[in-house]
Amino acid sequence: MKIIRSINNLKQIIKIFRDKNYIISLIPTMGNIHDGHLNLVKKAKLMNTTCIVSIFINPTQFDQLYDFNNYPRSIKLDCKKLMVYNVDIVFIPSVLTMYPSGINNYTCMYVPVLSEILEGSKRLNHYKGVTTIISKLFNLIKPNLAFFGEKDFQQLVIIKRMVHDMHYNIKIISVPTVREINGLAYSSRNTLLSKDEYKIAHKFYLTLKSMADKLQNNIHYVTDLIKITTHQLEKIGFLVDSLYVLDSKNLTCITNNSKNIIILSTVWLGKTRLIDNIKVEIFK
Ligand code: PAF
Image 1 (cartoon, helix red, strand yellow):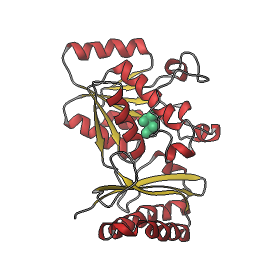
Image 2 (cartoon, helix red, strand yellow):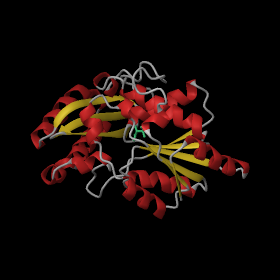
Image 3 (cartoon, protein in one colour):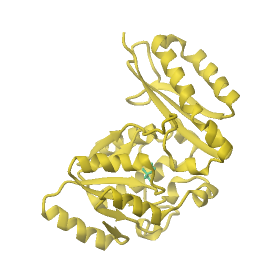
C-alpha cells in the first residue's frame, strides 16, 4: 500500500495503473476509518479494481471551526486498517495541496437547490464544500468508479447530480449503511459520544425503523407520524434537528403515488450530531 501526499506522486502512480488498463476505484473519506468505510473498500476490491482511498478533512464543508477542530483524526490507525484490506493507494493531501489559493473565496463546484434544502438549509455552504472537494478528487484521480455510503443520503443525491450535470465519466456506486448489531450506523462521529450517550444512540435507528414500518402500512399518516416519532426520540433523550419523509429520487415532497420514500433525520445527542435514514418501499 502506497501512502501519497503530493499531486505529482499521485499522478505518476495513477499513470502506471492506467497504462496497465486497470480499473480505478476511489473511496473519498475524511479518515477515522470505520467498518462503514471498510465495507466500501471490500466492495471495490471484490470488483477487482485498483483501490484508492483519500483521507482529507475538508475544511470548507464545516460551518463551525469548533466542529472542524474537533473532527476525530487518526491517520496512523487508519492506514493500518486500510493496509489489512489491501488498499492500493492512500492519498493524504494537505489543505494547501487541495486548495492552492487558500480556503477563503475558493473556486467552487455547486449543485443548486439540492445543496440548499434539508441539511443544506441548516449547514450553510456544507454541500458546496463537499462537491468542490469531490470534483477536485475526481479531476486529479479520474477514477472509473467512486464509492459512497448511503448514510448521508442527500450528499449521495447531490454527487450523482454533479456527475450527471458535469459529464464526469465516473460510475457512482452507492452502498447501504453499515450498522452495529444494535442498529447504530457506523460513523466517525460515534467516537465523540460519551459512554452513556453511546448506550442510547442505537435507539435513533430503532425509532426510525418503527416509523418506517408504520409508514409502509399507511402513507397518508405522514404528518402525524413525524410528530409522534419526534416526541418518541425526544423522550429517549435526542434533540430532533430534522425529520423528513421524502421521495428518495430527488428529495421532493411525497405524493399519493410515491413508491420510493426515504425517511431522513438528524438528531443531537449531547454535543454530537447523528444522521441516519431509512428507505421505505410502498407496495400498492
Ligand atoms: O462523507 C464524507 O466523509 C465527506 O463528506 C466526503 C464525501 C469524504 C467529502 O469530504
